[in-house]
Image 1 (tube, chains in turn cyan, red):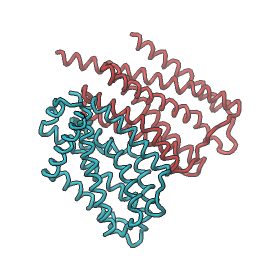
Image 2: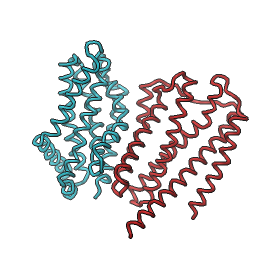
Image 3: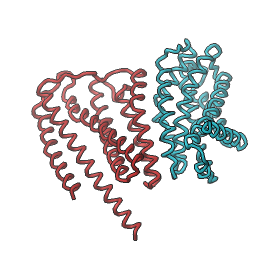
Image 4: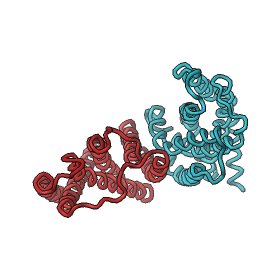
Length: 224
Length: 219
């Protein structure tokens, strides 16, 4: 019970802080929107079939914008010197990780919803009927992404040059997730996803494996 | 100075076995009917891949030991084997396309084994970038160990994902003609000896560097 209380408190603290500070949200959301517009210019949506290329494209945007957002989740603590205070608080260290993970997950999901709306508006990326299966697939992928993104953010927060290294370190590990995300999105908009889908299972395996591993490894990553 | 003695012995073994392997590859093993002389890359390509994966597996094991026991020697062993493993994966990624060009007609094919080796190479390149940026203090060692562990767990998933996504070109099972098999056996020994010699040398250099740092810190 204590553990969940700690997770809840950290989640609330970070959620409020992000909303009040605005800078991370503004930067990453605007970056996602900008990327969408730039992709439209680069690819010419009147000639490219968005149902084919759109799924991979949207996930690239989520990956880049998401890393911008998550990369800051521990950096802001080291900058203000509050990481030590967090670590000193009498709660299980994994509660800090889970709390931060949930905040990242929440904002990534909001970002994805907005991105989907603008992709529909600007690129004519239609998902209407496929929304439930798309939501399921994207949620699954985002859990895995946020799990590793939060862990790696903690890893590089105290490192010299962490901002530069963060995406380079994170993206190779996400390769299976990106392939799954692009395939699932494409399948969702064209013919829907069944629960027996092999990609969905792969994503589930990825989520469980890395959420557990990250919760466990986090303690070693932030040891003072 | 046992490590130095080991290093010398391993280099001697590597020299002898590689000379023998090269002699067999070019003087004894028959030329493959379909692929021609290029097929001879196989004798170094496959053992390099095995050595690379084994060394990165060692890096994974030493990383776990380091996090568990908090003993700096394990970190030294972890990044030494990771570095040599990375070099062997690089050899695989260089020799692969040369062979692939004549076997498949293309320099690069987005194929499971090739692509997962590339992703692994990228992961470990980032691992060294991390170490390069943060000047190898105790905290970096822990961070790098966590990265090595995550990367190791990711490899089978990467492979699975890419095999569903890409096409399969690598043969699942290879049956070799007897003369080829003998040659392959010797070249396997040669590359393993080379990998071990590199590893011993790298560990020696790492230990010397640390001793130097300690001396300077003490002054």
